[in-house]
Image (cartoon, rainbow, N blue to C red; front, side, top):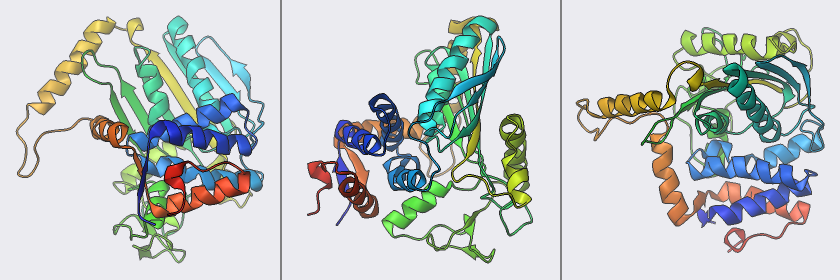
Length: 350
């Protein structure tokens, strides 16, 4: 089977049905599906529906909890500590950012630490929630080790992603979403689904040797060497250690951590607490315009800003559908068969 195209609305309904089949309440299943397809629409396929089989396996193994009861354990005027009960990440993280935005409207800043969540999808989604509320948004996540510290050949830190978003006036918001590794593990999973190698410098194999075989990749490498490593370590301090759930320390000292466990931070900063919102957004527009006015090197048409490549992909995929590689289609077919969910026509075997 070759790559197929499927429209976003159909894919989202189908994905929501799969999550309902895993035991999520309809509203939670819809949230989960929306966040994954949001990523696919923007070309962040590593965090899109290819994750469905991974989530199903996690539910089967007792990792992700489809009927989680998350709760606020500690709270101040500006902060929250949320115990997620191993909820599906997008469900509890959307809730956490909503709470952070509400606090920011009152206190100027809303800062939520989430303990014991699971995979959250593309973190830019949550930072953008704040930007769309005329705030700056921040989102960070940490897991047990999957990335080698600079100078090591075994995992000791997590490739903790960070997303930051800022609203603009006439231009789309700036949205920076990046892992602290050279590439996220989801991109390696995507290479597996496509049946292609990964570039040199992305990962190590089980023996700690560099590899370009996506199937053999076991440990990620940090972006910028010690810089990516240092950021990931400090993000652990802001999230896991702050939540009283030090995942790196526990894992490095041999403790078994429940599969898929994550800790996270989401924050909203009310621009109006510091400056005039329209002036801020106008200055963001002016900054972007200035960057685009810079001379470019040979072969580069223009300077791009964070979030801009994803918006170009969004326009193309809204018009022509989301492309799914054969491996992803096969995995979705298997999930649908197991869960008794009808396949959309575009995903039926040809």
